[in-house]
Length: 459
Image 1 (cartoon, rainbow, N blue to C red):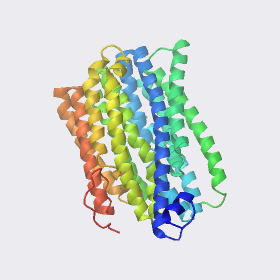
Image 2 (cartoon, helix red, strand yellow):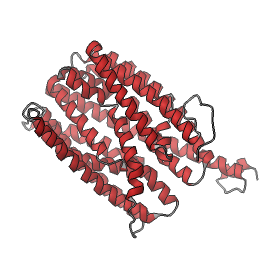
Image 3 (cartoon, rainbow, N blue to C red):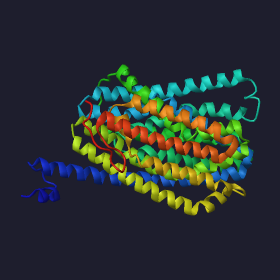
Image 4 (tube, rainbow, N blue to C red):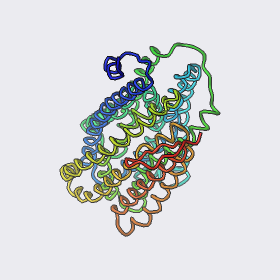
């Protein structure tokens, strides 16, 4: 029987070539279907998020919306930080431990990571409140009440971020992203409408309070569903806590992940210091539309990152290289296609925010161009995070984040909101290049769409 017939019939073959081809085709099909499903959910979630942002901008006005945007950015920064990298670490350690039968370590990671994320979120909330109290005037100003409410959101946000990482590690992308990005956004929108109709003021603190309720409900639902599914796949047994191993890898991952997340926030944060709230709201509206383009990379990473770790654990280097090539090419094509589509309808989307928001169209175009340029360098971040090289990834990302902040400080005074967009787009592109060079150096994997010359991996 030929290799083609064996593969077509789904039968086992003694030929190594046919077995490898069957595995690669299976990986390719599974990754493509999962990525499309994830992207569809993220697009739906973005629709709810976009509707919520339009609604809040129109109800609250430019100044209150700018305060809400600034506080929400800090919730996201602190919430991502509070997991200590264990959310991303779940995609690295859990598939590898399951592949090698170390179920005691899997159980320990699941429980330890959940408790660490909740505890880290609470600690950062208390620390943030202490800083705000020592600052003096911050809690007494317009940001005071929103900050107090946001301190309650951070631990829940961190816990849900960890749940997302665990679900991704098990190859359950819809369970990973639907609760935080679809359910939570829908609940925020519904809660805000209900609160205002019930007589609550359309102010930033009310929007943050709605975010608190929505995050709590969405995180609870996700935890219940995830726990029930894990119990069907993971037998009861002893737990092994390998904190030294986990944190040695996860803390650098946390630094890199935080810095990567901060790329979406550093411009807003610096604008909050250098520009009035109205300008921050104008810029934030453009970033809410640009996120549709960023979802392409997220969908590819959510369905493929854990496959990279599993392939390396199984010693499947050919499948690993194939996954990297597939992800690089399709992510770039999808990013460029979605980016062009977004720019085509952007006047309408920006106009829905209210009068004057179309002025941020140049900002949106710059941000989209930066996302497309960065996608040229492929999944280098996933390669370094999942296969080893997390410290290099964190170092590169932190350096590029510092460059983005410096460029913002230089360009915003002269160019305004456009200067912030140029700074972030340039720094993101340079980060993609540096990460690709790092992946080639450490693992011999060429991640860009146009392949770098290959070299043997440093083992």
